[in-house]
Image (tube, rainbow, N blue to C red; front, side, top):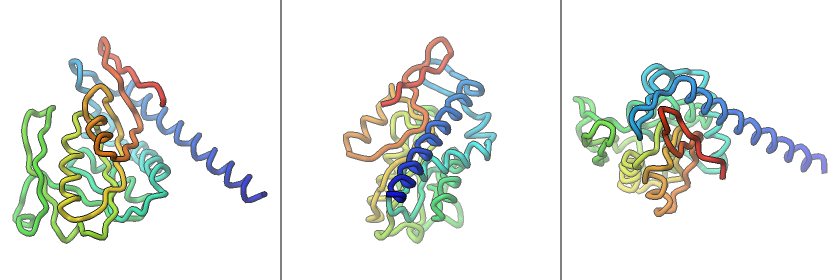
Length: 213
């Protein structure tokens, strides 16, 4: 009886903590995010240029809370904006972070998994690559990324996971734009997606968050 009560309180406290992390993130977006046009949110103050390490640590803990029931062996992201939340998540799981590179180098040219990813923000295509020695058929992979919009980056990482014969355990997203097609694309493929901040629209330069499910 005591164990059940203790476990119930623990779960309740973790859920409350998760709500607080989401609120913290939403408040930071309201404070420091900059809306550009009708579909772009600039968050270079705390996420993808200058990085707030304390906020990243909180995001990592929340992703761990949501995916701790999965047998994760690798955290996967794309350079460079996904690295900060991904490494915070990897630290919580105590598992390696692997990030796909967008540019080949002298040290990354052979024995690669590759995929082509189109960026709607930059209007360019990039080939992303991961060394085959860092991803294998025995891996259970959690993808972490900064944004989910049209889903191209996640699709590219999923293609690489498939090439390796690894298993996709889920996708963790810091900021999802629900009015774009990325979530539907992943839902249609029966991929588990956990997004922390969910944006339904940009109106008059302001961010409108989607109501909780």
